[in-house]
View 1 (cartoon, rainbow, N blue to C red):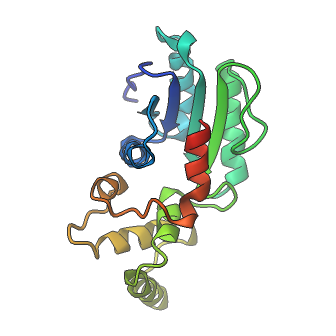
View 2 (cartoon, one colour; view 1 turned 60 degrees about the vertical axis):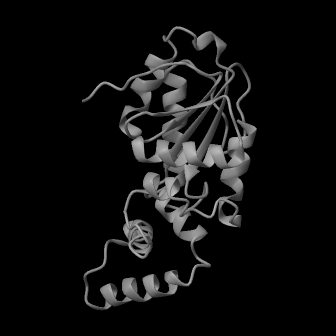
Length: 204
């Protein structure tokens, strides 16, 4: 497994699964005019524990005020929550009781499970919800339904990703990567679907 580079440059740490998510959140923070948050990719849920153990040993960690961890629910938001809590506990960090609520102790820790702290899915599902008002999503829905009718659609737990990627194919500069989509201003940051994530970032 490739070793993740771990640094502490700012007092607030936002840990996300990978590079694409990191680019997405960097753009979101710019939109919100939030500074002093360092975004780092930890290389997927199975590497979070190792990343956290390395993080607490980095020079400057004593200046960290808060840590936010974002992880995809995939099949179960509750399972993802417990997985993150276990990784924090194993790194001897404070452990929040549930989503969005900060832990006691220092540094404060927060957890957000994509897409909405309750449903299964991932960041793509959240973006698909944010694009729901765009006329192109009607075409995307018809496309996905057509795939289902010919038994060629992705499994149910991957449909959010399929919706998101199909929607991005409709843009002037199509690209399936959400980080690139964020940089091209294809994300409606003020959509109500992103309200809880916005609050999470502001509370961090």
